[in-house]
Amino acid sequence: MSHQKNAGGQGPGETEEEACRDVLQILALIGDKWSILVIGQLRDRTLRFGELHRAVTGISQRMLTLTLRQLERDGLVTRTVHACVPPRVDYALTELGTTLLDSVVALGEWAATHRKEIGANRRRYDAAHPPRKQP
Image 1 (tube, rainbow, N blue to C red):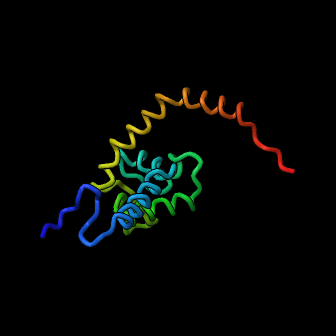
Image 2: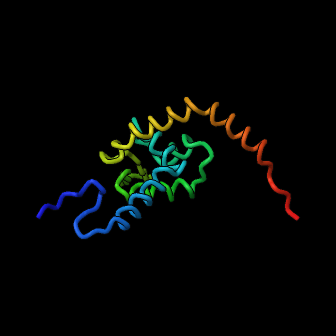
Image 3: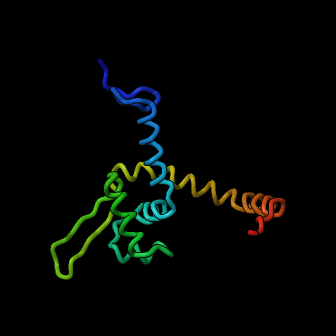
């Protein structure tokens, strides 16, 4: 009996529903704006927490901590603690994390290419569908 996954991404004994749920959870993490920005910052280098915090404009320390923990949990980022004073913690993409880079870059390029068209579509839609006033 083969243990290879089928074309639907299901493992042995796994339902299609379970496989879909897992895929949706992963896409939710990767599609999160903070995750994409963190992955983008780590694409070429290892960074300390403070460096990442400064590089990812608008992210709070708490949100950066939560994002890094989730990326580490999923095996996309490594956290290396150095025994020195003051303590130093470095973050880097794992081999698995680097496999996301082409997709993240392609998505960013697509957004940059189509941003004006999408902006015009939004303005057109908003003009045709004004917000409803609350009673």
